Length: 342
Image 1 (cartoon, rainbow, N blue to C red):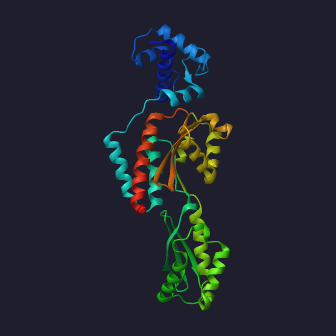
Image 2: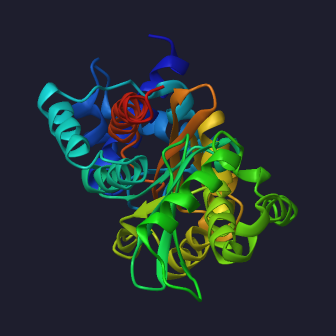
Image 3: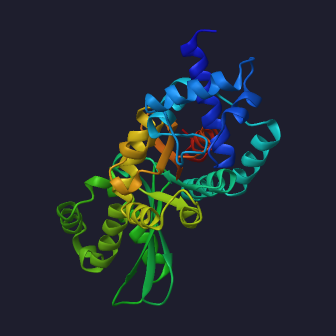
């Protein structure tokens, strides 16, 4: 075996051992897991050279080595061996998803919950970009003598309810009239097209009915605006405060990032479109130096694409996390296609 190849095997062994234990790894421990014979002295020398190359670090003079950010990056890009979930794990994930797959939003919320539960890290799922959504139908449901709800349903499965109030008594026949007037004009339109100007033009086109429709159209317009926004489900945030590798300041900063859904969605997309993993200094804040984000896109149709991600420490179990992400994204894509009849 060439010295360089041997060193890469040793780096791989150190990373995987450190992921399991969280303790600095010594040469004896490395020798025990290598699939070839080599002396402890040779391993020590190679680990010293890997440290000189910036791939390993020695926290204390008498301790073993731990991976550096560069060491993790080489492991992720070149050394990590793919793993697959066993059939029992896959079946359990599929069963959990099917129990909560009545709507796309429930499906993605459950997907994030499963990822967090299986990996032990925080997880997130983004819905397909709302800007591509078309209005399938607007339903009206009476909630009181003078109140009702407009329920806007999009081509991407988003369901946005919005209450409105009228200064006259609402009857079933009035709701039927609202249904016909609104859906004749809006069904099949992009949610982005429901602008204030469009609402005004629509109101004028209703003739005598226009006096009865302002609050109805305003509710539909607000629902369309919400449907056009990108949705994100985040689960397991509390795990960020229980990981010894992540300082409290890092956890707080991550919580701030998660609170800005548009920014975090972009970060997830960046991770998924590149190597699939962003680590340490590749993230937008120096406080995230001990953090990593693994992400995989799901696809239900050409314009129906979102991302699932796991957020955890640099000492993330990358092979198992990636396998779990790939399993869940495959199931989400298939389930979403069925729900949306794509």
